[in-house]
Image (tube, rainbow, N blue to C red; front, side):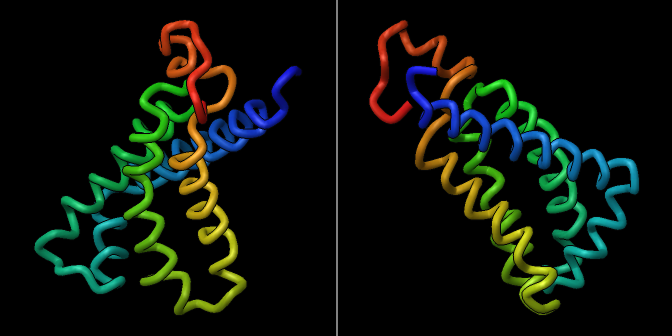
Length: 136
């Protein structure tokens, strides 16, 4: 454990990736139309709600899995940001702080992964040419 910061990054990345996969699978198993209704309720035009629902499902499941294994980590985390930002500002902020704190923490943690990189146990790190990359 020579680099505790890299292990901390990995722990954050993996935990968030699991959260995204589980959340995306839950939306998939409950059906995209339910997610589309929530998206419309948030204020998005109903014409785009089905597309946005599938974006949410695919990005959460595929992007979350990529975060877990640490492949295309920053991109996978970056694609989560619009979903989480919309959830925080358009859905949970209306419901009070009790409903806002968890999604806000996920949003900030995801932004941290975008900025900090994957940490240890990541395919990104293994394919970086063997040398230590700055910020990895």
